[in-house]
Length: 250
Image (cartoon, rainbow, N blue to C red):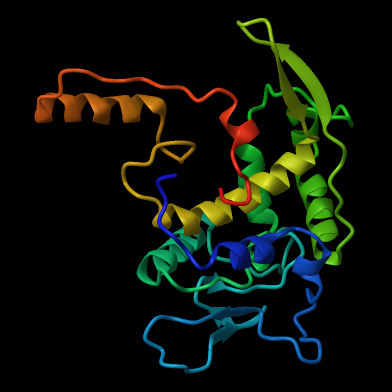
């Protein structure tokens, strides 16, 4: 699929899950027998102890701050979101075998606000009928409450509305409409994971990657055809590929 093999996939996914397990120790105190808030083993460490950080210590991916939602007077200000993502991406690039075991502390108010701003304001609402504009009208309060639910483990995704969209061939394409808050959390998690896994993809991979589109892929194909003197191109489309592909292998 255009990506290099990585040993950190399951670990990073589980560590970023915005549910109670990701925040079971949000107070900053370790439970008996629990490891540090973040562990990573770098190549060449020769069996040394894993790199560790806590909610209030300087971690490899940026400062681990235990805040409510990043708002209000006296609230410690974490590093800006772009800088934090850049730090994570740099580590992932420099240490391909490093496992990120805790990223949940980055899901703060600033990250959620950035995720909200990246959503399409014209998207259809979910089952709760809350639109982007309605949510924005009381954004700070809503994001504070959302972050608190993530921290204390009470956040629970809501049902997804199913809509069937007609296709040109007469068939119907199922479309899911999640509620806005679920899209905010999902986008924030995706931003963290993209910073890691973008480093594992090969340069010729263009599918569903930030800053890339089918137009970029077509440009590269055209350049390759002209440069290498290729006289013909075969365009193939696998019918219902994602419906039939072995998802465990994928």
